[in-house]
Image (cartoon, rainbow, N blue to C red; front, side, top):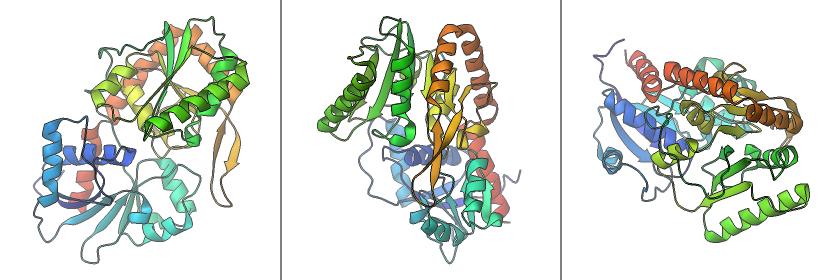
Length: 370
């Protein structure tokens, strides 16, 4: 490793939005700063006032907007491809991802104008090539997770109505069809009787109290159509505020299994966080997360087909009946599931920390500036 080379980066993206891109960008940049990089940050979108973050980290991240850079700096965009812009005077990299079998046509042009495109998974390496992105520009740069925060043993949250065994699904966004909430609700309501000592916890986000009310009503109506009654075993948590990383870690430590019947992922941060916490994970056998979860360290839902979103894009349709059987299996075989959860944490610790992720990228930066 050529550690004597000073790495100067002009980073574009987001730090404080309630999105996966913002979370991974600030995690990577904070780690790169620890590893000696000199970084200036320019937001791609209007940044709001951050909440639920370490004040010292917020101060450091804000200070990056004013950092002076050497003339030979590199440019790193960490955002969706429509924002990528090649700097004619500097080597320009786009770090991005997508959850479908291809990327939108206009994204292909945006990617090809850059000097390199970094994607976190082999899934996107292939989907970007299939979409016309030049193969020599693509590099796989896996992401990571904070294994000190997301770990077994954090104090659990009190969740009113939670039963002895609980499944969890979580997203930093609102009610997103891609995450498969509908499949999970139907699978749970059909597989588990209300009298059984098992609950399903759904944690999502909303922009207003009215949206929370609408989300809750949607859940109630959907469950009533399936079960013909209200199900107290289904616990809906939606908030307008951002939860801190520590509180999210407590939520993971409050449940027994993480379930994500996703239709497609560009990486799947929540699956990785659950694995780091030592939870057994049930998720769909398709897309980016298959780089780090498999039949040995998790439970994979069969795909029954693919759903077209338009003439070019499609994603997977998880098999609801197979999900039912996997949830029942985990509930009935908790020792086996716990062992898989331990293997999942080992996988993350060995290969997918933010430190390892940033180190791989820093090595590449130093190769470029030779």
